[in-house]
Image 1 (cartoon, one colour):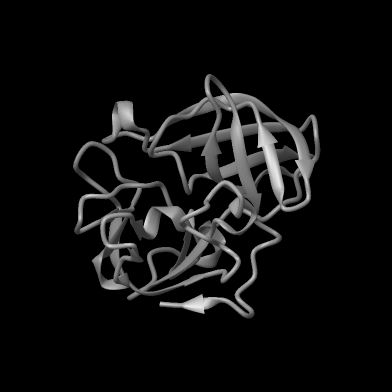
Image 2 (tube, one colour; image 1 turned 120 degrees about the vertical axis):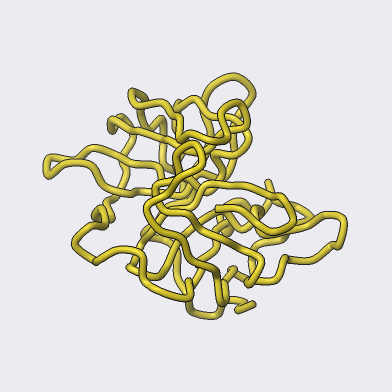
Length: 189
């Protein structure tokens, strides 16, 4: 996902025309405001200048509990639902939503600052703990992986458990539970 203002984060499809990302990816410190939805472009399967499909955002929903001035204090609400101008996939192509538990095998891949043109990630990490709406993991990631799906392995296979929102010094980070995201009582832009 990128913006016309030059910002980049990772985002992922959760419905044929809906993506999720971190809310902080849509905030502009210079303007002290969220960007306009029309400036958000999503490129499905982006890889070194090519992609499978692309769409533009028409609106996004951010929980009112998220405070971009205090992102760490409100990280449990650091997620955004972005509605695209058209569908990019079918429902059958989307991974299932699962619940994370401490010790689960995990995977995190995104468009990180050191390789912006190629999705990179840690394919062998785990969930360290679950605390409320937050999932701590030991997956390696850098700036740009914000908004990436935290995948966990269940008996049925891999599924999306969360949305990566913070990285720790060294290795590891925190994701917001995907099951905990809701569109009720949220701010629509």
